[in-house]
Image 1 (tube, rainbow, N blue to C red):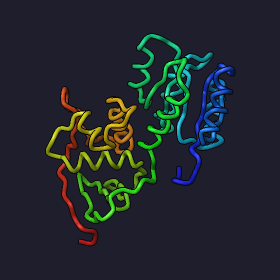
Image 2: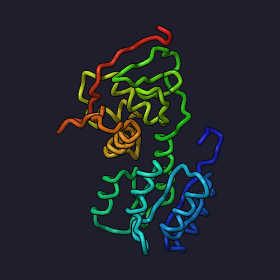
Image 3: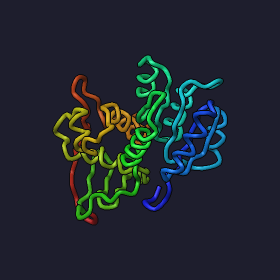
Length: 243
């Protein structure tokens, strides 16, 4: 999504009396909305076009929203907000555990949903300016991070696509490599405290970055410290390109 482009949302809900007015409202708020009434139709839409974020109802006939959400996150790396009518916390917790970025409980205030959508999109924005003036590279365990161009290359020299959120998380871990960073500290370092942020957002971002940096037969560089938070398990050096 470029700074000038209209965010494209995938709205998945089997109830037309909610889905259709919500799609119209979101369109009026500046979003491009594609509707799907089942998980199967959503999967078909994903084959046809690209999206910036998905809104997924948990309770649907056939494949439920949690199963679809798992696919969106693991296979598509697509930011997802859950829509749920259930009063119990179980579904919401499961959804956050598998990587959903946020949730709203029906009935919800549409303006609140818009605020949450924009908050998630800000965190995942791939084109936000970062790192200007910092030309020294980070080298760690064969990996290289270029903060000026926001480029990450693996030990084989292959470019790994990362979002701005990925970059900020990795840079925070690199800049504080001698410390164990808990969720609160990482939230402050990565994006600051936003109105609709919750601690699990950091866990979700760590999981995404781990998947992108996973190498077969090797341990994860980003380690979870029980009761503490996260740390980067690697020796780090700063160097100037060409030296």
